[in-house]
Length: 326
Image (cartoon, rainbow, N blue to C red; front, side, top):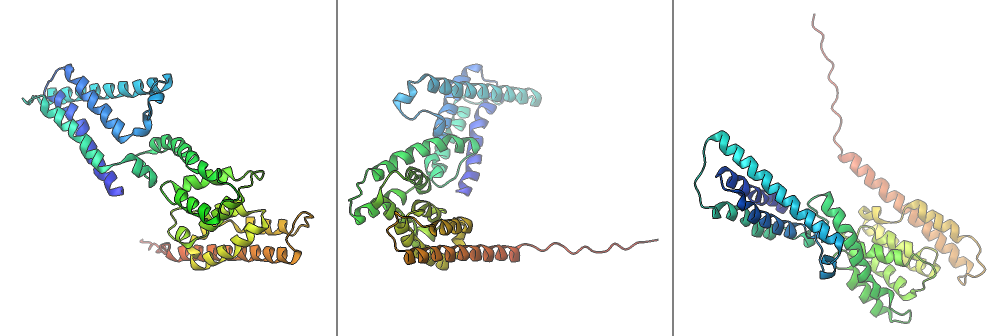
């Protein structure tokens, strides 16, 4: 993807060369309109997040004003390039004689080339953006799409079979934008008043699968599952041994686990007597011991990772004493 971004810069240069060359050839300002149309089409293809996506969005006043501003900015850019081209032609004293279709074709060629090199939606799904502005424009749309994607999961009944709920969770969170969808689902389940017992259990199971943790595509899956399980002894008894096994198998993923401080805090909270708790005291003590052991394992894994990075860091050059000359 990074190589595509480099090639994209070269293909984009064709877009600007067209009006610059047309200005050097001394063509009239009548070519500003077709060049502006080419620039607008290029912008819609390369930056779709800056344009409305549905007919209803196009009918809103704010969307129309934003689209008009985009069009006017491209007209101004073409006019500036025309002026620069005329200035270069006047200074050089050379006015090429070409068909006006040639500079238009040069700019138009940038559209298919850039489209072949860059798919904005596919790149956004992989976390690549042309600039910070494109990333900021994509963020609210991705959040809205994630909210709509996890809504069917929140509508599953508590009595739904575990296999059905687990398959639905894997299907929804295992695709593109899985990390954004996981954040949306975790936020929706943060309300303790909502039950969703089957969904919570399926989410803990899915997020602590080796196939999910090892690739690191969803880096904080384990921490999110702990946020769901925290305060629920049944879910914690499911979470702790799976998380411990994952940390032993993939210690380099410790950054995606809950912090040791948070694990110890959960263990301390679990020691308090709760008259409504139906878990026997000795099992609660075992669970707290497991949380503390997991906290120690997280600390150890992070310490080993820090030591490994320190060993790989380049050593500071030894200063050579300067020899004084008389």
